Image (cartoon, rainbow, N blue to C red; front, side, top):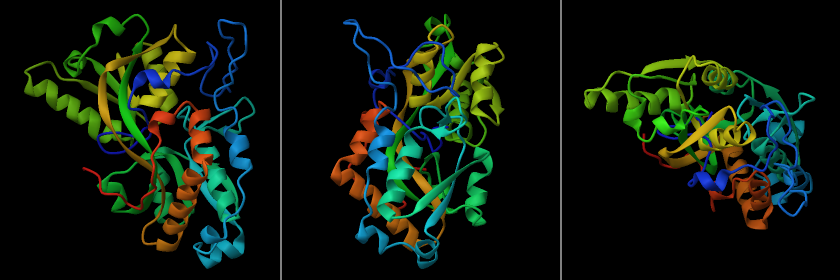
Length: 320
């Protein structure tokens, strides 16, 4: 749901770095199986090792000391995500929420010395739920934007970016933004792609005197994916990680357009505005994971090493 300003949630500087080692035919609700390499050896399944690395994290008293007193006393944190955004947040065949962010959330909670409960939510309503204190925080592939940090606090933990996905067989027709002019282009409602990137692409078409883009905004990322498969839309805007993931696990259905990219920006975990103690605890926990190498293991397990950052920041300054 990338999910940020001119870029999302979530993703990579180089498309080639996101080629996912997963088996053909999986959907976002399935755990990718391991694939055999040319020598016959088995490649690790996507995400393998990430959860184990998160589970092995021990509590850090310096992080615990930063937690708000009520959360420390309760010993738990209520989280929310929209698990339709593989490989960042999705579900396995049992319905369990998995992905990069659930592993990061677990690792952070272990640093804090507390438990977590992750609830499924509608992406477009998550920030309102944070503001109303229904949830303590959200890992939901949110890119960091001035509009978002005006209403919630955000702590950065990775970089995100936007790319284009089309139906397999049509990729030869798309090379630049202007090739999208006159086409129906879909994105998930509330994402950076829907709020910023798509309007920017529409303006480029009209400024060039080309036919207008017809936007198709859908509430679920799964629905946006399906609109490409069913020819309801000709192109989709989403996080680099997501478009790379689907073009790899369903190569007969989808193709990522590597030449149409939006530069990466920071993505982060969101929490209620002004709750400085919790933001500082998140920052300290993430930075500790970066410093001790756990962060790198989790990023590598999900083939997202190129999206890694060296420092965690609270409400970092980004372009709007």
